Image 1 (cartoon, helix red, strand yellow):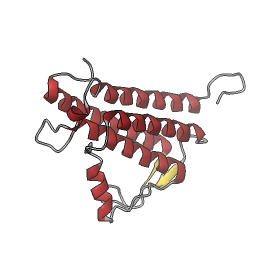
Image 2: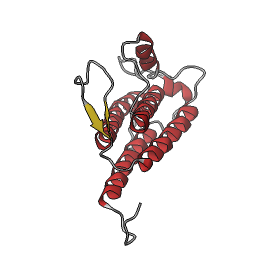
Image 3: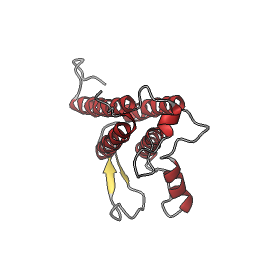
Image 4: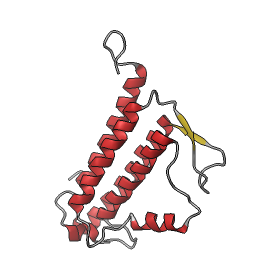
Length: 176
């Protein structure tokens, strides 16, 4: 949106800056998996259960859930359901029937969905109650701004994990 003089409003500038920062974080994650085979993307090169293909899947799932929260005020998640935790754990693995190219394409679609949702918001002060979960204070809510910052921070955190995984595989990182 533009103001009356064709200039970006402060709200639109902030929205654009947050989306730009998120796009940069996504790009770093994508660079971490460049030139990998599907087999390499499935490897677990550290003592953890994490693999690079799974990191892409996990961040995609996380971003979609938070975009749904922004759009609908609900993540579609019941944290008391054991299947929710099973799906969370599965999101960290690239299965034999999945390809790195497919999960990267899905990540790109999730990014586009997030950007459409954010662009459709009237402003970044839109606020929704957080779902009941042991890690959220009871009755807490987040604005769209806080939600986008959370997605950005979580993506950046997983970029660090991904750099460690990639370096363990072949000595490279997203910066190489």
